[in-house]
Image 1 (cartoon, rainbow, N blue to C red):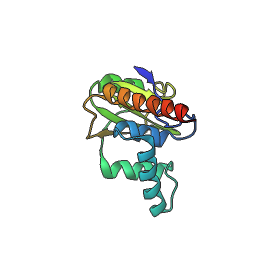
Image 2 (image 1 turned 45 degrees about the vertical axis):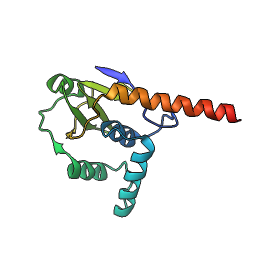
Image 3 (image 1 turned 90 degrees about the vertical axis):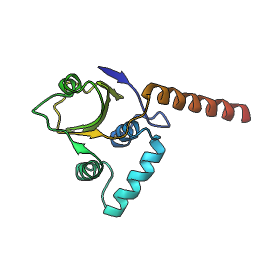
Image 4 (image 1 turned 180 degrees about the vertical axis):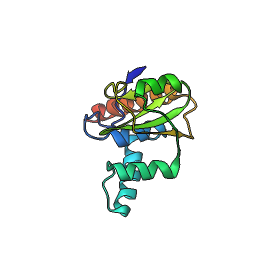
Length: 146
């Protein structure tokens, strides 16, 4: 199953899939995740969306899941529970309890690697609603003050 979700804190549609996917998987804001990944990538002298950086970062934090030539959709069926980060040609996405959260539907793509994320939001939808409510509140406050 696929559900549209853009974790980008400014609502932009840019090449930020690494930040978007990891922020959702770790229940962090886009900004927190961007800052953390940027700092680590800078120390390594590499861009945060480089495949080597992403693979090394995820290998240090999570366990790779063995799979056999699956598409993202087939992985959703095989692992209906849990949080997973999934890489494929030119992209990374997040799957939580069998649902892909992303700005486009990538379920037909073949998988490169999969990591199971240890930590999980107690309730992703509640976390998502709270984050949305906070965003709307800030917009209203800014409009009132202008």
